[in-house]
Image 1 (cartoon, rainbow, N blue to C red):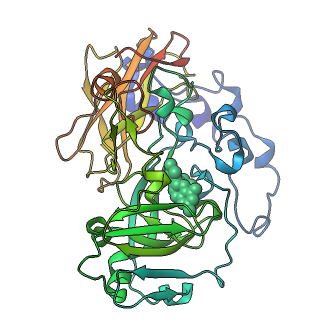
Image 2: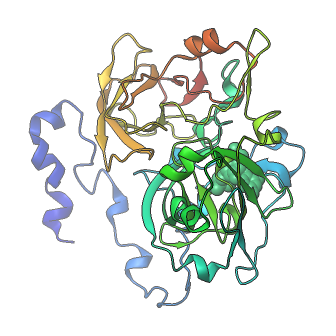
Amino acid sequence: MTDENQNGPSRRAFLTGAGAVAAGTLAGKASAQDDPAIAIKPWMQELGDGVDVSPYGMPSPYEEDVKRRTVEWLTADPVSSINFTPIHALDGTITPNGICFERHHSGVAKVDPAEHRLMINGLVDRELVFTMEDLMRFPRENHVYFLECAANSGMEWRGSQLNGVQFTHGMIHNVQYTGIPLRLLLEEAGVQAEGKWLLAEGADAAGMSRSIPMEKALDDCLVAFKMNGEALRPEQGYPVRLVVPGWEGNMWVKWLRRLEVGDQPWHHREETSKYTDLLDDGTARRFTWEMDAKSVVTSPSPQAPITHGPGPTVLTGLAWSGRGTIPRVDVTIDGGITWHEARMSGPSTPKALHRFYYDFEWDGSPLLVQSRAHDSTGYVQPTKDQLREMRGLNSIYHNNGIQTWAVDADGKAENVEIS
Ligand code: MTE
Ligand code: CO
């Protein structure tokens, strides 16, 4: 690096002008005196690792904190449990495979793809059993979709509880799936006229199963074998899982081994005792498959405080809807007194995560940060109070209420509730 670059004005200062420097709003440092770390470093003076030192690459050791985490007290045993995607530390919209949250009812099934079979039975003209090789001969498609567990934010229903967006909103991931339209497999088997429902069943010890209406099965469901270009991870259902775009994660059966066509739903455990919402009048909402529009600020948040002090600040977050795209997200930093339209960035495809930003000058005073999603059907994300008015206090699932983070003058953030 030349003296001119070390001591002269930085490119940023040049671009923003002297006025900005005087106002103290500049995000960079002006000279080497201000930041001695610009000096020559050991890694600039030695050779690094050659190729093939890690044939399957891992993140930098400086990023070791970016990992899935669980909440010990949530479940009695890790084989029927959940962990959370570190969304506070991610950007863009795609979730890297190694940090997609996991939810298992009986642990990760160890499936040998050569021995694995997918069967279609019930009200079909031809019962069929496919090998993985058979499946590879069907035309395949690529789509990016979010998967959100219906229990995401469930612990926040009665009030703010977990201090981190990873824990409050991290039962979600968004990957590109390669898969076969389920419709093609059902056409091969020939669904009979009375065939109105489909039971999807997993090859794990839980034999997890869900009833899916035939309309959805024939619409946009996929039998997927790749995520983000590579084979599904064992945790995500290797070698094959069901993708049910926009619908609650529980229906996305992993280690998929059987599809039964029937004339009515099966009323299995996951659609009766679980994944239903007990209302105040004693009745329960059932078959609430579509995930309502939701958004959350991922930074600043309790695990991603503002560490740089007042001045230019990037607020960012995620938004999604099980019914389409997210054309607009509003952001407030004063607890809803004033709202600003966020800047959407990245692809906006239906039933996938959307990324938003709000770039502002932080004056160093405490903030109450919220985001509010609008989806392509015109639906607007409700406050938590509005949700509780509609559904009472017994619910766990389908909490898409507006989240609040209180940021103090030091930039530290905390999970609070104001509406
Ligand atoms: N499929 C099987 N076979 N077994 C399971 O335990 N868990 C379900 C669903 N599919 C599950 C399953 C639940 S509740 C969710 S939220 C998603 O898988 C989680 O998918 P993931 O582990 O890829 O995040
Ligand atoms: Co789930």
